[in-house]
Image (cartoon, rainbow, N blue to C red):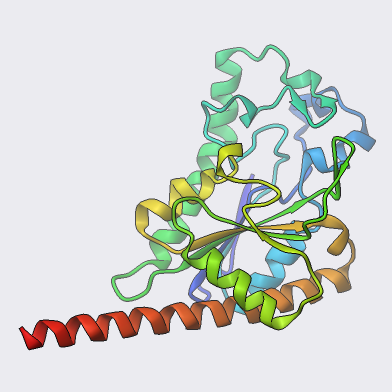
Length: 261
């Protein structure tokens, strides 16, 4: 139910895609939804996996992806969150999630969330050393219209308490192209409960991180997905270089001050 690829990649990043698939295992009987509903954004993030795969390839970075629909369990939510197994998503009710017993919730947590959490932890353990600390990048997409409201934002750079990489990345992306409407912590923000992966895995380790939200009409086909990934790769590289330079300069100043004393 969780897949890790390119674990041996040399890139200084870890790519995560929590909403990669709309697959619902047979035992859940489609959660009472039609095939058309399962193909909607409520069940997954269309285009996100393809972009994440391109980032993994071009950055030579590991990728951890969840292979089960977020409607069964949303791996970007902790078990205690009500919308980890949502009864309603946008305008759609999810019959198979209605009145779940605690035992049913525990089973999904054990079968879906915990293996994903362990896969991310294993990947970060593998990539993190005293000298090398990977940047955590999660990849998502969002719908152009939400509950009847058009969204003008096209790419969101989300962060929780550590804004270092998001702040630098949005600047670096803007130097690559002025084509897109770029915003920090939109169309979602930490108050919406969307930064669980960042707070669970990146913040405790002191790892720089960002959650990417790309409007899904911009990555609706293979060419668009590759083009978006290429722009992101260039911007990510620039952001990492700029932050590494700042860190090295700060370390140098600290060393000089220490020697002066």
